Length: 160
Image (cartoon, rainbow, N blue to C red; front, side, top):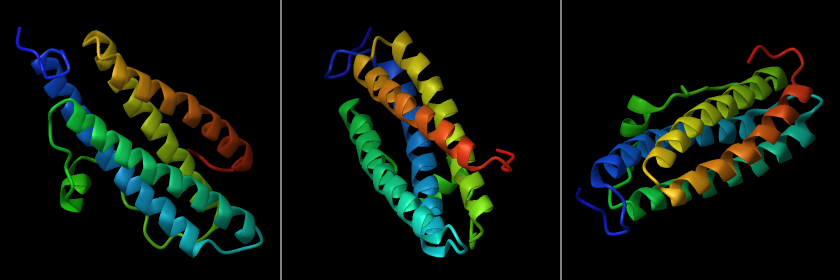
C-alpha cells in the first residue's frame, strides 16, 4: 500500500481530493450566489438580510481557502477555474435574485447541499482514517446544521 506524505493511503487520498475539489466548486458557486443576494436584496428586510448575507459569504470564502488547503495537504491540486467549478458544483448559479424569500430559499438550499456533500466526504474520510478531513467536515456540518435551522425559521414559505 502506497502512502502519502502524511501517511494516508494514496488511492483513498486521491478519491478524497477529488470529492474535496467537487466541494470546493460547490462552495465557490454558493459564495457567488450569496454575494449576489447581499448586493441585490430589496425590501423591508434589506438591512437585516444585507448584513446576514455578508456574514455568510465572509465565512464561505474562509471555507473555500480551508478546503483548497486540505486538498494540498493530501498532496493534490485544488481546481481554481470557474469553468471547472461550474462543471461539478452541486449548486447552480442564482442570477439577479433580489426578493427576500428567493434569497432565503437559495441560501437554505445551498446550505442543505453543502451538508449532504460534506457528510459524504466525512464518511469517506472515516474509511480512509483521515482524521484531518473528517474533523474539518464535522466542524462544518455542526455549524451549518444550526444555520439551516435558523434559515428554516426565517423562511417559513420557502420550499427548500
